[in-house]
Length: 399
Image 1 (cartoon, rainbow, N blue to C red):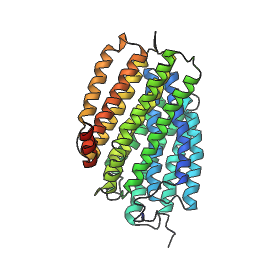
Image 2: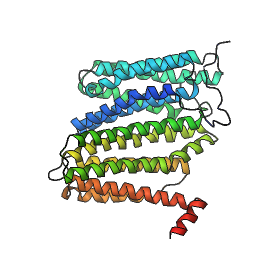
Image 3: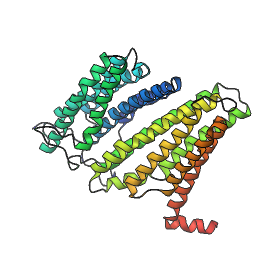
Image 4: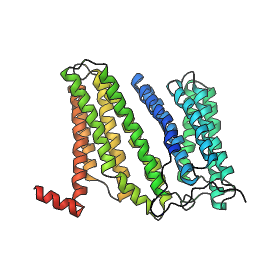
């Protein structure tokens, strides 16, 4: 009987599969990818540049989240799985390096690296689960079939130029993003059900939380490195403080109010695969997009805090905060089963700020957007504290 490469069941004291060191090492490539995406937007903050960054970000997220699902099933402590991650990491470095010129001279390099990571990982998984249950084997066969179907458009786009590359890559990405929603339905193999995706929810939640940290780290890096090269006058110091506080508010909105509750909910869910697909595979990309655009916004605000701002500064600032709040709203709706009034109100206020943005400096728009994020985080903290008996008693004593 073939050796099993599946993770052992988590122990009672551990609670869920721990994130291993090799998984954290693998993520280093995606620190570079996030940096490349933000720099791509900074250098070309136009409709075309935004479309390019969006398509590439969705591809980067997809290859990362698919790998996270695989390491939820397969044990990274086993040598074969470690070697898989190291090979994928090498290809990921090539993919990340090609991002700025993916729609230019390095389109084929990007497509080759992406197809190698997606299809190579799928083929490896077919080999790794060959001795497992029929349901698991069928699941990976369907996934491999869909990734194989998308490989052609990816490579065709890499060999093409201009509009043809756009069409091919949009088709390829659409195939991959639709796949999970239809259970990777494949003629002759049927479709996967959420019961086939018997993920260990705590691990998926922790992996996605770590990617949020990666993206937030890029925002802090942009703030720090840009500020270090500026004159330390009042306007620049204020801009640095506001942009950094914005990153702190983003951290608070996710990690203080929902990250642990999300991990607990998915760990005890009757169908963790369904929640992992919706909340962590699809919705989390909005959070990542908001943070990446936030890094771009920080660069614009620090470059011209007062006077004539970058033409896209207000859009970047408000778009970042809006996407992040929307992502949090949908994530909390999926996890808690209800919408958060604070987030809805925050989105409305951001829209009102946008109506007056043309008359404001970049620093003023950033300060107002940061105030909205901080206010939403404070509201959420207060609401959650009132739901906890000990915290509610403490708040009453303060009052």
